[in-house]
Amino acid sequence: MNIILIGAPGAGKGTQARFLEEKYGMIQLSTGDMLRAAVKNEEPLGLEAKSIMAEGKLVPDALMVGLIKTRIAKPDCAKGFILDGFPRTVPQAEALDAMLKELGKKLDAVVEIKVDDAALVERVSGRFTCAKCGAGYHDTFKPLKQAGVCDSCGSAEFSRRNDDNAETMKSRLKAFNDQTAPILPYYKAKGLLKSVDGMADMQKVTAAIEEVLRV
Ligand code: AP5
Ligand code: MG
Image (cartoon, rainbow, N blue to C red):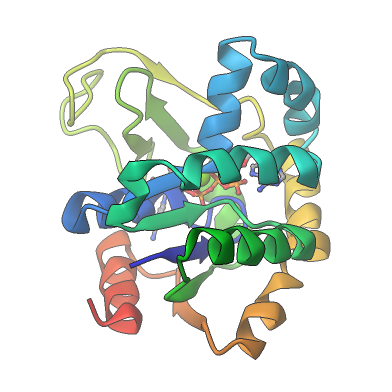
C-alpha cells in the first residue's frame, strides 16, 4: 500500500509513519528527515536547504522532486511507502503523479491528520528525538520510560530541532496554510483524501488511520 500523510507541522506525521512502518513493513519516506541528514552531512542539498529550513520556508520544488524521484524508485519501496512531508505544493503533487505513472505504481490513499494550531505549537515545543535511532519523544505526551535512555535503542543522546521554536513555527504554519493546504482539494477531486482527528491520543490516531485505510 502506498500512502501520503498530510498534516501541519507537529500534527503527528512522523509519529504515525513510524507506527505504520513497524506494524506493516511499509517504508517511511520523510523529506524533512532526508533534508536534515543532508544538512548534517554537509551535502550540496543540505547547504542549499539549511537556511530555508531554519526560516520555516519551503525548499524549492525541483530539489524536492529530484530527491523523492531517486528514493521512490529504490527496491525497498516495493513493500509500500508512506510519504511524510511530500508533496507539499500542488506542483510537487503533480510531479509525484508523473513519477508514479512512470514507475507503474499508484497511490492508495492520502490521509490528512487534523490538529488545532495551539496544540501544534505545544507539540513541537516539547519534541525531542533519539540521535542514534531517530525514535521520537515528547516531554509531556511521550516521555522516556527511563530518564535519559532511549526506549528503542538504549542510547543516551538526544536532539531537538532548531526550527522547533515559536517564531519559526509561525512561518511553518503559514507555509502549510498557503502552499500545502491547496493539495487537499487536489486529492479530494481524485477520491483519495481521508481525514482523521489528530487531536486524540497517539494510539487512537493510529486506529483511526487503520480504519480509513482498512488494513
Ligand atoms: P518536516 O520535517 O516535514 O517538518 P513538518 O512538516 O514541519 O512536520 P514535523 O516533523 O514538525 O511534524 P510531524 O507531523 O512529523 O509531527 P511528529 O510526529 O514529530 O519538514 C521540515 C522542513 O523541511 C520544512 O519546514 C521545509 O523547510 C523542509 N521540507 C521538508 N519537506 C519538504 C518538501 N516536500 N518541500 C519543501 N520543503 C520541505 O509529532 C510532533 C510531536 O508531537 C512529537 O513530540 C510527538 O511525540 C508528539 N505527538 C504526535 N502525535 C501526538 C498525539 N496524537 N498527541 C500528543 N502528542 C503527539
Ligand atoms: Mg516529522
